[in-house]
Length: 232
Image (cartoon, rainbow, N blue to C red; front, top):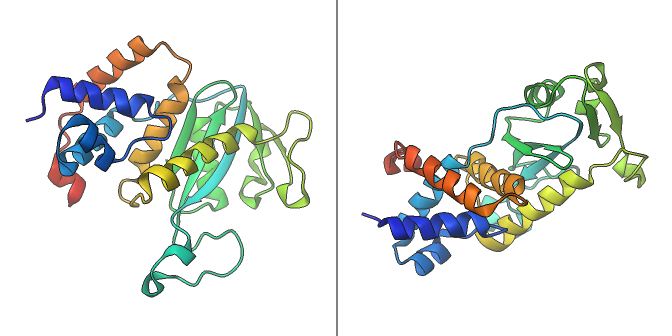
């Protein structure tokens, strides 16, 4: 059984480590086994679940494919993906970020127009200012939003108020955590990892004592998660 002190230390480390903290490192710092640290990690990520309210105002949308580089895999596991968006063998995630506000990041089955539009409609208030790149799946979203885009393939990154710099900053932070801390995120648990990064993004300028107390309460309420459910 893990003591309250160790839980508090783990919650503190998870909420303040900008790029996250691996279960191996957490186990060393807290004084538990790696298996226990991994379980605690996921309990806390469950408590960090993203809010359901809709974003508004200026909102940026950008998609990302999460997964390791083919060249770094063992030859027997390479998928021999061709040129293009580098999506083969990776998991698509749609990021939705309010400028100066909260974020959402949803693991999706694909980035087809219908899927992307549904994700946006669920997370952004109708009539908001929406900023994207030139990806084809955003082509018809201007029927519901004040939509502007920039064409990255032509070297266009800022056009008046239109840019995706906020979204790209979020993905850059996530990528540093993926490569430098976690190294791998399974598809099964990827949404929880996204919840973790979205949570820290949203509270980075908030009062720490208030955030810490709220997270401790949420973790205590997420005790229904069982180790077997995470590993089956």
